[in-house]
Image 1 (cartoon, helix red, strand yellow):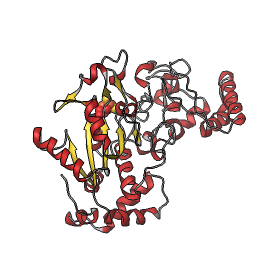
Image 2: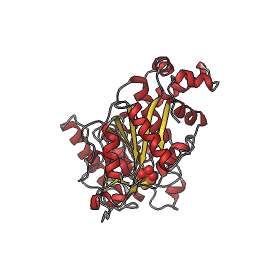
Image 3: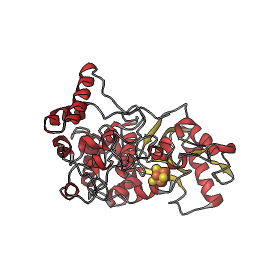
Image 4: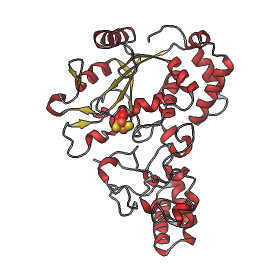
Length: 366
Ligand code: FSX
């Protein structure tokens, strides 16, 4: 899979025109919330850049993250991401196996020392020295330390790699931990979600290649371009929340009318991701649009909180609170038309926002 030419050369070889490249960078600029003029600069930078060497390691996971990436809604995006990078090792996708596959990884590590991007999906087993999850005769723990040592940056793709995820669920028999607990001497970018949105993976890699630096990150080291807003802030059902119109069950009149799913357990108000804007399967839909509340799969600890079908106020959501900024303003604006209890809650949130300019955000669950 490795190549040494520029991205521009690779695109020309495949008959991809500059116009197509500009369309692609225009799309990337839009999902990265960059100004439209960034599209041309991105196209120029990409055309002359070397394909980025990427080594992808899979640990304790369900392969949903790789499935997500390979099922990018637009074949052009999938084609383009594989033109932008030299995917030098990826166990699920690579044709070779055994000694040949391990040799390819070693060759890429040597040729791109200090320059390759390491992508990891899955959590890291640390129990009994990491013996619960091994590959090529080594524990994932050992492999991660080795390969990360010469990486430019590490991308933790999926909630398992980013925050521990399902493998870390109580009683956590394998001693699963997120990548960032092992790799502490270099940037670890978290692209959470179970699975993550493919455009968030592709867009983050493209940003690093284009600008030669890491994107702006939130307090959980997630790219702000994709994790800067809550699902609630961008949800098309938000007006019903503001008006106090809630489905009380999944088959009542409110559900049939498409009202807010807060009271049947939606975790959108405390979940930060781009599902409500980018959606899934080519922008066709996302869970809330399909009638099911958000489970909060891109947030730390979602797997152990329970209460998937209980409203946030009753569910166990750590010590997190309904978010600030636009949410507080929206709640305050809509409070006049809802029940007294909801008014009190909105007033409390508004007062909280007024007292402090800082937006209330999630706190990492210990
Ligand atoms: Fe985890 Fe990914 Fe969920 Fe699955 O690789 S984030 S269980 S979609 O596959 O790691």
